[in-house]
Length: 348
Image (cartoon, rainbow, N blue to C red):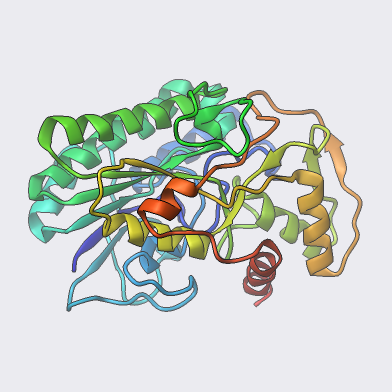
Protein backbone atom coordinates (compact mmCIF):
# COMPACT_ATOMS: atom_id res chain seq x y z
CA UNK A 1 0.00 0.00 0.00
CA UNK A 2 1.26 3.45 -0.86
CA UNK A 3 0.35 6.46 1.22
CA UNK A 4 1.38 10.10 1.17
CA UNK A 5 1.43 12.13 4.37
CA UNK A 6 1.69 15.90 3.83
CA UNK A 7 2.71 16.88 7.35
CA UNK A 8 3.30 20.01 9.37
CA UNK A 9 6.18 19.69 11.72
CA UNK A 10 4.65 16.39 12.60
CA UNK A 11 0.97 17.03 12.64
CA UNK A 12 0.76 13.85 14.59
CA UNK A 13 3.63 14.18 17.03
CA UNK A 14 1.36 15.40 19.59
CA UNK A 15 -0.34 18.52 19.30
CA UNK A 16 -2.68 20.88 20.26
CA UNK A 17 -3.39 20.99 16.58
CA UNK A 18 -6.32 23.35 17.01
CA UNK A 19 -5.25 25.63 19.85
CA UNK A 20 -1.68 26.51 20.62
CA UNK A 21 -2.27 29.40 22.94
CA UNK A 22 -0.19 28.10 25.84
CA UNK A 23 3.17 27.91 24.13
CA UNK A 24 6.07 29.38 26.06
CA UNK A 25 8.44 30.37 23.30
CA UNK A 26 9.59 34.00 23.51
CA UNK A 27 8.07 36.33 20.94
CA UNK A 28 10.17 37.00 17.85
CA UNK A 29 10.17 39.95 15.48
CA UNK A 30 7.50 39.98 12.79
CA UNK A 31 10.17 39.84 10.09
CA UNK A 32 11.84 36.74 11.55
CA UNK A 33 8.52 35.04 12.22
CA UNK A 34 7.21 35.59 8.69
CA UNK A 35 10.49 34.34 7.22
CA UNK A 36 10.19 31.18 9.30
CA UNK A 37 6.63 30.67 8.07
CA UNK A 38 7.70 31.16 4.47
CA UNK A 39 10.59 28.72 4.86
CA UNK A 40 8.31 26.12 6.40
CA UNK A 41 5.71 26.53 3.67
CA UNK A 42 8.33 25.91 1.00
CA UNK A 43 9.30 22.72 2.83
CA UNK A 44 5.74 21.45 2.78
CA UNK A 45 5.44 22.45 6.42
CA UNK A 46 2.96 24.66 8.19
CA UNK A 47 3.36 25.05 11.93
CA UNK A 48 1.58 22.36 13.86
CA UNK A 49 2.46 19.39 15.94
CA UNK A 50 1.69 15.73 15.81
CA UNK A 51 4.67 13.73 14.70
CA UNK A 52 4.69 9.99 14.93
CA UNK A 53 1.55 9.81 12.88
CA UNK A 54 3.36 11.16 9.93
CA UNK A 55 4.78 7.67 9.41
CA UNK A 56 3.08 5.39 11.88
CA UNK A 57 -0.20 6.11 10.21
CA UNK A 58 0.41 3.20 7.87
CA UNK A 59 0.64 0.70 10.71
CA UNK A 60 -1.50 0.51 13.87
CA UNK A 61 1.52 0.66 16.15
CA UNK A 62 2.13 2.95 19.09
CA UNK A 63 4.07 6.08 18.08
CA UNK A 64 7.77 5.55 18.57
CA UNK A 65 7.92 2.26 16.66
CA UNK A 66 9.77 2.14 13.36
CA UNK A 67 7.59 2.78 10.30
CA UNK A 68 6.15 -0.32 8.70
CA UNK A 69 5.44 -1.05 5.07
CA UNK A 70 2.34 -2.95 4.11
CA UNK A 71 2.14 -5.22 1.09
CA UNK A 72 5.57 -4.10 -0.12
CA UNK A 73 4.31 -0.54 -0.48
CA UNK A 74 5.92 2.79 0.27
CA UNK A 75 5.43 5.43 2.91
CA UNK A 76 6.07 8.91 1.57
CA UNK A 77 6.31 11.82 3.98
CA UNK A 78 6.14 15.49 2.96
CA UNK A 79 7.67 16.80 6.14
CA UNK A 80 10.77 18.06 7.95
CA UNK A 81 13.86 15.91 7.55
CA UNK A 82 14.67 15.66 11.25
CA UNK A 83 11.21 14.25 11.98
CA UNK A 84 11.42 11.34 9.56
CA UNK A 85 12.69 8.01 10.95
CA UNK A 86 14.58 5.46 8.84
CA UNK A 87 12.38 3.50 6.49
CA UNK A 88 10.22 6.35 5.23
CA UNK A 89 10.84 8.23 2.00
CA UNK A 90 11.02 12.01 2.30
CA UNK A 91 10.06 14.57 -0.34
CA UNK A 92 10.38 18.23 0.54
CA UNK A 93 7.81 20.36 -1.25
CA UNK A 94 5.17 23.03 -0.75
CA UNK A 95 1.58 21.77 -0.54
CA UNK A 96 0.56 24.89 -2.47
CA UNK A 97 2.58 23.69 -5.47
CA UNK A 98 -0.23 21.89 -7.26
CA UNK A 99 1.84 20.83 -10.26
CA UNK A 100 4.44 19.16 -8.03
CA UNK A 101 1.78 17.35 -6.01
CA UNK A 102 0.01 16.08 -9.12
CA UNK A 103 3.30 14.88 -10.57
CA UNK A 104 3.98 13.06 -7.31
CA UNK A 105 0.55 11.44 -7.44
CA UNK A 106 1.15 10.27 -11.00
CA UNK A 107 4.55 8.86 -10.05
CA UNK A 108 3.45 6.97 -6.94
CA UNK A 109 -0.26 6.33 -7.48
CA UNK A 110 -0.91 6.35 -3.71
CA UNK A 111 -4.07 4.95 -2.18
CA UNK A 112 -4.28 7.56 0.55
CA UNK A 113 -3.21 11.08 1.45
CA UNK A 114 -3.19 11.77 5.19
CA UNK A 115 -3.36 15.54 4.98
CA UNK A 116 -1.72 16.85 8.14
CA UNK A 117 0.04 19.95 6.83
CA UNK A 118 -1.24 23.27 8.14
CA UNK A 119 -0.50 26.71 9.44
CA UNK A 120 -1.80 25.88 12.91
CA UNK A 121 -0.70 28.73 15.16
CA UNK A 122 -3.72 30.78 16.26
CA UNK A 123 -1.57 33.87 16.91
CA UNK A 124 -0.10 33.79 13.42
CA UNK A 125 -3.56 33.46 11.89
CA UNK A 126 -4.69 36.59 13.74
CA UNK A 127 -1.56 38.52 12.77
CA UNK A 128 -1.54 37.39 9.13
CA UNK A 129 -4.88 35.87 8.05
CA UNK A 130 -3.86 36.00 4.39
CA UNK A 131 -0.89 33.71 4.97
CA UNK A 132 -3.04 31.42 7.12
CA UNK A 133 -5.66 31.11 4.37
CA UNK A 134 -3.05 30.62 1.66
CA UNK A 135 -1.55 27.59 3.41
CA UNK A 136 -4.70 26.06 4.87
CA UNK A 137 -7.22 26.73 2.10
CA UNK A 138 -5.18 26.82 -1.08
CA UNK A 139 -2.90 24.05 0.18
CA UNK A 140 -5.86 21.79 0.96
CA UNK A 141 -7.40 22.44 -2.45
CA UNK A 142 -4.14 21.41 -4.13
CA UNK A 143 -3.86 18.22 -2.04
CA UNK A 144 -7.41 17.28 -3.03
CA UNK A 145 -6.68 17.83 -6.71
CA UNK A 146 -3.53 15.74 -6.48
CA UNK A 147 -5.42 12.92 -4.77
CA UNK A 148 -8.10 13.04 -7.48
CA UNK A 149 -5.42 12.30 -10.07
CA UNK A 150 -5.34 8.67 -8.95
CA UNK A 151 -8.64 8.36 -7.08
CA UNK A 152 -6.94 8.26 -3.66
CA UNK A 153 -8.78 8.90 -0.41
CA UNK A 154 -7.85 11.98 1.61
CA UNK A 155 -8.05 11.89 5.40
CA UNK A 156 -8.11 15.58 6.32
CA UNK A 157 -6.85 16.70 9.73
CA UNK A 158 -9.10 19.48 10.96
CA UNK A 159 -9.76 20.99 14.37
CA UNK A 160 -12.52 20.64 16.91
CA UNK A 161 -12.34 23.56 19.31
CA UNK A 162 -11.09 26.21 16.89
CA UNK A 163 -13.92 25.52 14.44
CA UNK A 164 -16.76 25.39 16.98
CA UNK A 165 -15.73 28.48 18.95
CA UNK A 166 -17.52 29.33 22.19
CA UNK A 167 -20.42 26.91 22.55
CA UNK A 168 -23.09 26.00 25.09
CA UNK A 169 -22.97 22.25 24.55
CA UNK A 170 -19.90 20.54 26.03
CA UNK A 171 -18.81 18.00 24.89
CA UNK A 172 -19.67 19.34 21.43
CA UNK A 173 -20.98 17.01 18.68
CA UNK A 174 -20.19 17.40 14.98
CA UNK A 175 -23.58 19.08 14.49
CA UNK A 176 -22.50 22.04 16.63
CA UNK A 177 -22.79 25.31 14.64
CA UNK A 178 -19.33 26.57 13.71
CA UNK A 179 -18.46 30.01 15.04
CA UNK A 180 -14.67 30.22 14.95
CA UNK A 181 -12.97 32.85 17.09
CA UNK A 182 -9.77 33.07 15.01
CA UNK A 183 -8.84 33.00 11.30
CA UNK A 184 -7.23 29.59 11.84
CA UNK A 185 -10.61 28.04 12.62
CA UNK A 186 -12.15 29.75 9.60
CA UNK A 187 -9.44 28.50 7.23
CA UNK A 188 -9.77 24.94 8.55
CA UNK A 189 -13.54 25.08 8.12
CA UNK A 190 -13.04 26.32 4.57
CA UNK A 191 -10.72 23.38 3.98
CA UNK A 192 -13.49 21.09 5.21
CA UNK A 193 -15.88 22.64 2.71
CA UNK A 194 -13.46 21.83 -0.11
CA UNK A 195 -13.32 18.22 1.10
CA UNK A 196 -17.12 18.05 1.19
CA UNK A 197 -17.35 19.68 -2.25
CA UNK A 198 -15.02 17.08 -3.69
CA UNK A 199 -17.20 14.31 -2.31
CA UNK A 200 -20.33 15.87 -3.85
CA UNK A 201 -18.81 16.90 -7.17
CA UNK A 202 -16.58 13.94 -7.94
CA UNK A 203 -18.04 11.15 -5.82
CA UNK A 204 -14.90 10.83 -3.71
CA UNK A 205 -15.01 9.40 -0.21
CA UNK A 206 -12.69 11.70 1.71
CA UNK A 207 -12.96 11.86 5.51
CA UNK A 208 -12.57 14.79 7.92
CA UNK A 209 -11.18 14.30 11.43
CA UNK A 210 -11.67 17.15 13.89
CA UNK A 211 -8.96 16.71 16.52
CA UNK A 212 -8.98 17.79 20.12
CA UNK A 213 -5.62 18.91 21.56
CA UNK A 214 -3.23 16.16 20.52
CA UNK A 215 -0.19 15.48 22.68
CA UNK A 216 2.43 12.78 23.05
CA UNK A 217 5.96 11.66 22.06
CA UNK A 218 7.94 13.79 19.61
CA UNK A 219 6.13 16.96 20.54
CA UNK A 220 8.65 19.79 20.54
CA UNK A 221 9.17 21.29 24.03
CA UNK A 222 10.85 24.34 22.46
CA UNK A 223 8.39 24.95 19.65
CA UNK A 224 5.32 27.05 19.13
CA UNK A 225 2.72 24.37 19.63
CA UNK A 226 1.85 21.84 22.27
CA UNK A 227 1.38 22.94 25.85
CA UNK A 228 2.09 19.48 27.30
CA UNK A 229 5.61 19.25 25.88
CA UNK A 230 6.24 22.92 26.63
CA UNK A 231 5.28 22.46 30.28
CA UNK A 232 7.48 19.37 30.56
CA UNK A 233 10.36 21.19 28.89
CA UNK A 234 10.12 24.09 31.33
CA UNK A 235 9.82 21.82 34.35
CA UNK A 236 12.77 19.67 33.29
CA UNK A 237 14.93 22.77 32.80
CA UNK A 238 13.94 24.23 36.15
CA UNK A 239 12.27 27.17 34.43
CA UNK A 240 8.98 28.87 35.20
CA UNK A 241 5.99 27.59 33.19
CA UNK A 242 3.80 30.29 31.67
CA UNK A 243 0.01 30.36 31.89
CA UNK A 244 -1.94 32.82 29.74
CA UNK A 245 -5.07 34.20 31.37
CA UNK A 246 -6.48 32.66 34.53
CA UNK A 247 -5.59 29.10 33.52
CA UNK A 248 -9.19 27.93 33.70
CA UNK A 249 -9.51 27.48 29.93
CA UNK A 250 -10.42 23.86 29.22
CA UNK A 251 -9.31 21.63 26.37
CA UNK A 252 -9.82 18.02 25.30
CA UNK A 253 -6.37 16.37 25.39
CA UNK A 254 -6.09 13.25 23.22
CA UNK A 255 -3.00 11.04 22.97
CA UNK A 256 -1.25 10.88 19.59
CA UNK A 257 -1.35 7.08 19.46
CA UNK A 258 -5.14 7.21 19.64
CA UNK A 259 -5.17 9.79 16.86
CA UNK A 260 -3.05 7.53 14.66
CA UNK A 261 -5.62 4.75 15.16
CA UNK A 262 -8.36 7.18 14.19
CA UNK A 263 -6.55 7.97 10.93
CA UNK A 264 -6.25 4.30 10.11
CA UNK A 265 -9.92 3.73 10.91
CA UNK A 266 -10.87 6.66 8.67
CA UNK A 267 -8.82 5.27 5.79
CA UNK A 268 -10.70 1.97 5.98
CA UNK A 269 -14.13 3.50 6.60
CA UNK A 270 -16.89 2.37 4.25
CA UNK A 271 -19.84 4.32 5.65
CA UNK A 272 -21.50 7.56 4.55
CA UNK A 273 -20.50 9.98 7.34
CA UNK A 274 -17.85 12.56 6.42
CA UNK A 275 -16.83 14.30 9.63
CA UNK A 276 -15.74 12.88 12.98
CA UNK A 277 -14.61 14.41 16.26
CA UNK A 278 -11.47 12.79 17.64
CA UNK A 279 -10.92 13.42 21.33
CA UNK A 280 -11.84 12.07 24.76
CA UNK A 281 -14.89 14.14 25.67
CA UNK A 282 -13.19 15.23 28.91
CA UNK A 283 -12.38 18.82 29.84
CA UNK A 284 -9.05 19.61 31.50
CA UNK A 285 -8.12 23.18 32.34
CA UNK A 286 -4.60 24.57 32.02
CA UNK A 287 -3.94 24.65 35.75
CA UNK A 288 -5.07 21.04 36.09
CA UNK A 289 -2.82 20.11 33.18
CA UNK A 290 0.14 21.86 34.78
CA UNK A 291 -0.52 20.08 38.08
CA UNK A 292 -0.63 16.72 36.27
CA UNK A 293 2.64 17.52 34.48
CA UNK A 294 4.23 18.56 37.77
CA UNK A 295 3.13 15.30 39.39
CA UNK A 296 4.50 13.23 36.49
CA UNK A 297 7.81 15.14 36.52
CA UNK A 298 8.11 15.20 40.32
CA UNK A 299 8.33 18.98 40.55
CA UNK A 300 6.13 21.80 41.80
CA UNK A 301 7.30 24.95 40.03
CA UNK A 302 4.79 27.78 40.39
CA UNK A 303 3.55 29.24 37.07
CA UNK A 304 3.80 32.83 35.90
CA UNK A 305 0.49 34.25 34.68
CA UNK A 306 0.39 36.44 31.60
CA UNK A 307 -2.52 38.19 29.86
CA UNK A 308 -4.97 36.05 27.93
CA UNK A 309 -4.51 35.90 24.18
CA UNK A 310 -6.87 37.14 21.51
CA UNK A 311 -8.98 34.36 20.01
CA UNK A 312 -8.46 31.91 22.87
CA UNK A 313 -11.50 29.81 23.78
CA UNK A 314 -12.71 29.45 27.35
CA UNK A 315 -13.96 25.85 27.00
CA UNK A 316 -13.56 23.01 24.55
CA UNK A 317 -14.28 19.27 24.59
CA UNK A 318 -15.52 16.96 21.85
CA UNK A 319 -18.37 14.47 21.72
CA UNK A 320 -16.82 11.50 19.91
CA UNK A 321 -19.77 9.12 20.01
CA UNK A 322 -20.15 9.24 16.20
CA UNK A 323 -16.57 8.03 15.73
CA UNK A 324 -17.22 5.24 18.19
CA UNK A 325 -20.35 4.13 16.33
CA UNK A 326 -19.12 4.55 12.75
CA UNK A 327 -15.36 4.03 12.93
CA UNK A 328 -15.29 1.67 15.89
CA UNK A 329 -12.84 4.13 17.44
CA UNK A 330 -12.51 5.35 20.99
CA UNK A 331 -9.62 6.96 22.85
CA UNK A 332 -7.84 4.28 24.86
CA UNK A 333 -4.82 5.94 26.45
CA UNK A 334 -5.64 7.61 29.76
CA UNK A 335 -4.39 11.10 30.52
CA UNK A 336 -1.93 10.08 33.25
CA UNK A 337 -0.53 7.27 31.09
CA UNK A 338 -0.21 9.56 28.09
CA UNK A 339 1.69 12.15 30.11
CA UNK A 340 4.09 9.49 31.37
CA UNK A 341 4.72 8.26 27.81
CA UNK A 342 5.32 11.83 26.67
CA UNK A 343 7.71 12.59 29.53
CA UNK A 344 9.62 9.34 28.98
CA UNK A 345 10.33 10.25 25.37
CA UNK A 346 11.37 13.79 26.25
CA UNK A 347 13.70 12.47 28.95
CA UNK A 348 15.31 9.80 26.75
